[in-house]
Image (tube, rainbow, N blue to C red; front, top):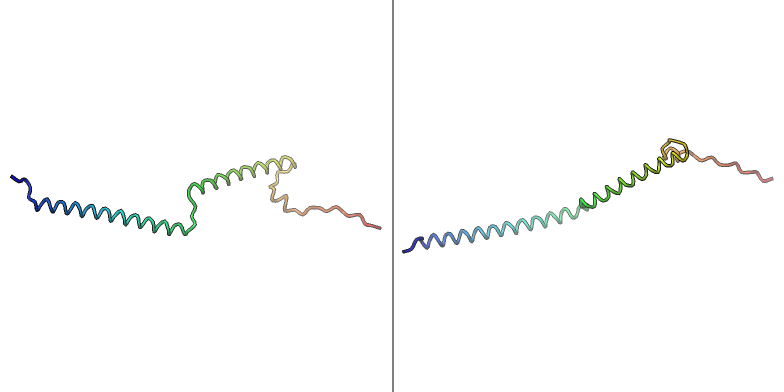
Length: 100
């Protein structure tokens, strides 16, 4: 005696096949969309997060070094002026002796 109708088995196999095909088509569409997005974003010359963090760390290090150099310069000259203000002043020229 047969428990299931062959028609139901065939329909079940057909639906399983269709579901598998649709899942495959969905994965393919997703892959194509990701590729198109990579191409679009790649043309924008964006940096990666790792590159950004590296440059950020270098900038912080340079800023700390600059502040230390400013403090050292101010301590060595006895002035507490920013370095930019000190370089903005014109330097005095020594008078040249006149040739007779």
